Image (cartoon, rainbow, N blue to C red; front, top):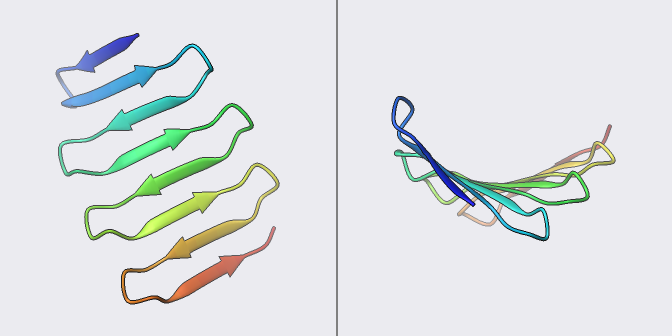
Length: 70
């Protein structure tokens, strides 16, 4: 299923395996996985992982990695 939200100019794609992908006009992409984990790719190519157990990981384009545990 693909939905386009005109007001927010956001595309929301839901797959049968429950993966959901949101694409925003600023080129941010969010993937929401069935286990509750989220992957967020920001316009500057920073990647954030929000794990269902509370762990947050951020990977910056310069190679820096920041991990924050719950």
